[in-house]
Length: 153
Image (cartoon, rainbow, N blue to C red; front, side, top):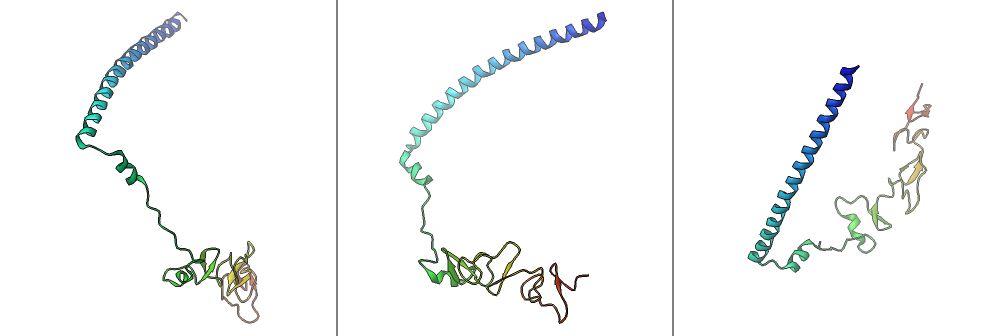
């Protein structure tokens, strides 16, 4: 029992000594860092004077040039350009009203959660025989569309 108390006391003394030594070394590092920071400030002032920087130039370079965004409500021909999502303009965006779920058949007509837009009509691909599993995927005569598969089970 005496050995455990002696061991605990020696560990406690070592921790105390190490913490005091660490704080002393941190104080020394702070003093050297403060000296080097003051030297860096002097170097920055010399650099600015040497190159004669005008602060207004720096600000103008940071500002982004704003370009006017082309929207289809002002420029409808933009929807016919190559790479456009679709030829129609709905709410300032080019869309294909034959395939877009948010503008199915006409602007603003939304399909339900389980429906997709095929040829401008909202259809449920899980049970529609003409669009089983996707647009224009017809089931053969007599087959049923179940869960998006023709003749499931």
